[in-house]
Amino acid sequence: MTNFLKGKNVLVTGGSGFVGTNLITRLLELGANVTGTYNKNLPQVQTDIIRWCKVDLTDKESCHFVTLDQDYVFMCAANTSGAAVMENTPLVHVTPNVIMNSLMLEQAYVNKVKKFIFLSSNCVYPYADFPLAEEHCTGEFFHKYFFVANMKRFSEILCQMYSEKIKNPMTCIVVRPSNIYGPYDDFEWETSHSTPALIRKVIERQDPIIVWGDGNAQKDLIYISDFIDGLISVTEKVNNFDIINLASGKSYSIKETLNIILKTEHYDEANIIFDETKPTMIPKRLISIEKAKRELNFNPKISLSEGILETIKWYRDKCGL
Image (cartoon, rainbow, N blue to C red; front, side):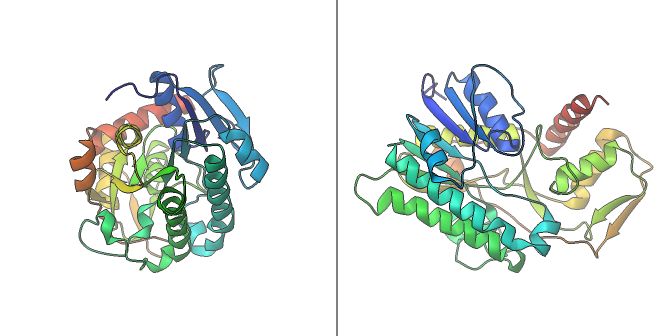
């Protein structure tokens, strides 16, 4: 990988979040001039060489201000949550995200940004029992993803509009991640996803450990450093509108993931209870990474066991455990 970002002006929206924090750390290593935005949550990386902007990206003037003189924009900012919020109040994901994505694309275009990288979601795929490739986005969604999937898909189409349907287009690239985990993830009970929630429950030696659902749901889990590798490679190598899956290419059930966490933590006597009354999401999600392998030479390196170990080490250090 060449150091093509050295000296370039790079904006990371949602810079205080999980992906944004890890991306900013990598960009600094690559010598980029980094601007990060945040809103409610304070940045997790504090250094004088980052230009931090506290802004509301549903405000047009703020979007114009942060995209000024930027070469590359990574759209990591999003209104996100866990399964309970998605099931009970799904509209919370729609309005703010549509406004943010629309205004950021508009103002990046006005300010002549070279590339706009949009973090979408694998929720735009239908329910299937085979690995889903980029072309398998049919407009049919798993019913619990109806709101967020339509929002993400509309934003993907906006990216295509700016890339292909106007004069003097702006290169936009859509990245569809699988379930990312690792250091700086969200471990708060109200908003965390299943993997960090399980890690915290095991570290805290909860008794019993309550697992939402029957434990058989399958997810593709990719460690954050592998995902960031792919994201940087996409930015360097893709020069026209495109959609790329970034995933591990492997799926694990909740039970398998939990067993790895328990083994890593040596919590052999754990009492596990599967609560099928709790909100859960899609029962199976398999992601194809053949396109990323072929076009980007993408090759995830970190196994789930290695990734879980590193995540636990980080969380223990963060909490002083």
